[in-house]
Image (cartoon, rainbow, N blue to C red; front, side, top):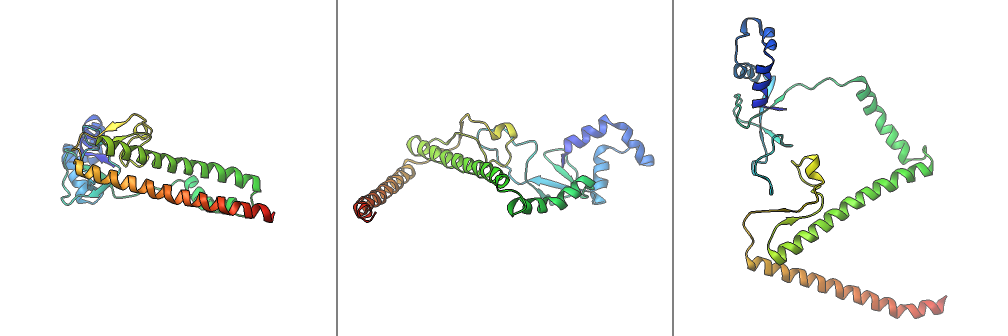
Length: 223
């Protein structure tokens, strides 16, 4: 997709494209876009997320999620347009999409050696475990700072961000939300919940250790 301002600037910087229109070569970029919209070669879209993300001063120039706009009229102001036809795939893309499932099945089943399957399995499992640990640690740090200080501070990579760029995705510097701080009653409630959860986990963990210690001598005698 592309933005309305990008379309206007592209048409004005490449005036030789108007020669394709022959008798309509004097049309303005806005008129050309409206003709494409009427012929349903273009469709106007609008961003799904219309609020500014925490830590940002303006909306993303290229949002990751769009929805079809009700009024199919060209506009330069924060309007996006998508082509209604799909670009033809190349031969290599077609062959790769055909053979990729068979390659996956060959890796998962008996065709590949055991060492190859381990070489693929352990790195994938390690990356997945790393992502889950980072998300869990990130959530724990956020909850602790929010309960104690009432601030929304995010550490570690923002993996779940929808509109973040590749640079922002791996940004470790904390981002503080300048929004409204939570009330002290809400913070006290979550503090009580956190303390209760910690006490319950500690109690069950202590009971498990006591049960293991009581069964230990009998296991030693049986062996």
